[in-house]
Amino acid sequence: MRHVTTSSWARHGDDRFERARVLDHGVHPEGLDLERLRFPEAATLPLATDAGHVVSVVNGEAHLSTPMASAPLRLEAGVHAYVPPHASASLSCAPGSFLLWARSPNASQARGARLLVRDEQFLAACAAGSHSLRWILTPQYLSRRIFLHHDETLVSRRGDPVSWFHTTMFDVAGLPPNEDGESVFKMAYNSRTEINVCYDVTGDARVRVARHPHVPAKQEWGPWSALTSETNYHLHEAIDGDQVEWIEEGGKRRSLRNKHEVLGRDGYVSLFCMFDPAPTGVERHRPGEYSDYEPLADVIERPEYAAHREALSRFDEMVDTLSLAKASGALSSFTGTPLFALYEAGARAQAAIERTLATQLAEAGGGREKILARWMRKQPE
Image 1: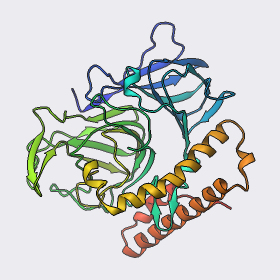
Image 2: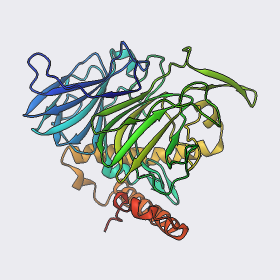
Image 3: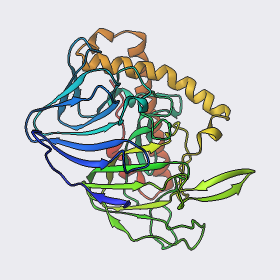
């Protein structure tokens, strides 16, 4: 399997839309299917009843029809849905729409039995005090956590919950350099695979993957590969495969699974990514270090995780309820309710967190606050 691929578009049979395969459940270690879909004309996509489905509308809009909703749900750009098995659903997509569609090969790899709609308007309002929960803006990237480990959606071939993120990586100007003296975004996801589906890439963007063995200095790398809006890059060493290194650390056996760098100049890279196993949302991402999502068994032992999950539970109810209401055309009926008040409070908290970050970056010098400016949330009136 190759780390970097370019989308190959085709129509299948009588399809009135085009598709490009990203993951094949029979080939890739996650054991799931993932496709890009684009609709030159209006068309309907049936969702098989013996599978679970995750759908993200990137551009355009689609109407989701399912017995689990009393009327078709309008899904616009920035809206994501999980449709469980046995739901007899279909998507009616408008001309010019672009969607991503992940699905399980059978019902056993779909642990969720409830329809979920997640609108980024409400995901961006999951914040309390100085803590962002699902809309994470850092000096390096913006990560929108649509489905996390505790969300009941798809599971991988190994039975682990997978996650679904929408991420933008910024220009690397001013970030700490790698061993070659280049500013890069550094990542080492040692406990999971990751597939990245790029859809909006500007400027000069590239990725390279470390060769085994992974070492802290004088690392050997594969070649740089260009990233475009049609690129997919896959960090897919199998956890029980020959390519995985194992080390003893702190009395525990750890895997050294994959390590990569992304370089982006004069632009940004927007993509969707799936992790297997899914992260919890608690992470370690520090400029200059190789960032990672730690193994779940380590994270859930910490008191910080319990507090994180408690805070998330309140906002998850808000996101799910208001997202479904908006898709149903009934959002106005929630004005003045406690859930809508929580949304407004979360949006204010998120905007304040981002203003604080911008101030800190401006005081530090280097100009990264200017790079972040277009991605910052505006406080609701």
